[in-house]
Image 1 (cartoon, rainbow, N blue to C red):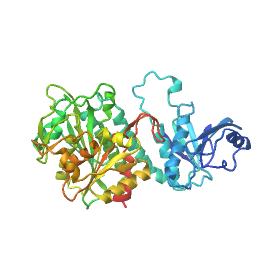
Image 2 (image 1 turned 180 degrees about the vertical axis):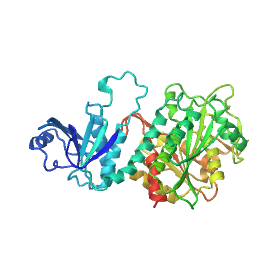
Image 3 (image 1 turned 180 degrees about the horizontal axis):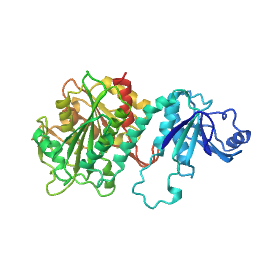
Image 4 (image 1 turned 90 degrees about the vertical axis):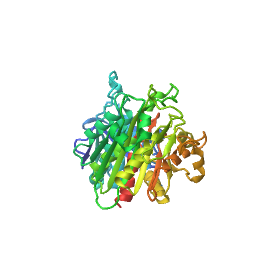
Amino acid sequence: MNIVFAPSRTDLPRLVGRIVGEGPLPEGTPALVAEAAAAARFAGKPGQTFEAFVAGQAGLSRLAFAGAGDLSAAGRRAALERAAGALVAKYLTSGEEALAIDFADSGLSAQDAAAVLLAARLRSWQYLVYRTRLKDEQKPSLKTIVALSAPEGTESVWDIESAVAEGVEFTRELVTEPANVIYPESFVARCQERLAGTGVEIVVLDEKQMAELGMGALLGVAQGSVKTPRLLAMRWKGKAGARPTAFVGKGVCFDTGGISIKPAAGMEDMKWDMGGAAAVAGTMLTLARRKAEADVIGVCGLVENMPDGNAQRPGDVVTSMNGQTIEVINTDAEGRLVLCDALTWVQKEYQPATIVDLATLTGAIIISLGHEHAGMFANDDLLASQLDAAGKACGDTLWRMPIGPAYDKLIDSPIADMKNVGPRYGGSITAAQFLARFIDKGVAWAHLDIAGTVWIDKAGATHDKGATGFGVRLLDRYVRDVLEA
């Protein structure tokens, strides 16, 4: 979606929209339009829309309103995003090519207006590369959003938010692509292509290099696939001096479950089991595009989990990079095996002060939290509060879950240092407890289980059905509020 700024009402498109709060329509609204809105029971409630046709000198035009509710209440940004998303969704395939959002006399700030534009762009995103037989009325027609009479300073704020949009869109692209297109090598290639010229330093480890480093846990997952694994590291060094921050993503580009194979129904969804790695890649693109003043390393452990004759078996014991041994009870608990070696590597290579990992790790977190929150596990209260605040500010919301020594005995193994799964109950917690064993003393660490939030089967305020891009806005907001503060 192209976003342009227009200072005045010259050459307006045929479709003009306004974001309004609860109550009467803005002054200057034609009397018949206001009367029609009242008759239609339009009250400016969040996500509510109303349209009228108005005759003018240039012919018939469309005037649309989208409700944002009580703009004086908490959650102002979320309400504005909901309104903007509803407006764009209504006209995305309407035949209109441009929508002017009129900010005149809106009372909105530059940050508010930029939030509206970000939501409009994100809600318009669709990935139609493989949809070759769409009817004309199904194809998106809306190509341009015109920001009319935007508050002073909006364009400079939009420069930052547009970088966020680019990162979210890149993450959605990676998550949406099928597994025959995105696998470890092609994931790396697409990141190299997208990050070229941004200043991001890229390091790639192949299977041989990882074997030399002793990454037996990650390589054990990968050994059943003809697609060879990769470890991808991306560093944006926008600030020198302090120890860096690391974002680590699970990148299982397709997950059959391995020998502990998943049921056939719904297995096609497992193309998005690399949603954590995709969020890290999108975040690195955002940070580079907006020239963030922070030193951040993004690491993606990239594998496929397949059930061929060379695949890892239940009962196998693997040795991780830091020397701890793991009894593999269930080959479908593979993400933690990938992450533990990636976590060890980034700590040995870069000595980060803080690590945040993102992973579509457990189905249990969906049972716990549904699709409304990602689960957060942390060894540091300050980091947890910072991430929670960032999530509330941007809409990628988190809910803190417990970890601690009481859960350790649930993953102890009689023949190795640990098992890769615990009992059926507390599955998300024992997965996090497993990862905690690979965090060095003194490192602030948070694990985000995003299994319920990277792919959603219904449209939301800022996304259509499918990939959400969850995690990019969260990590970017954390960088802004904490690392750049």
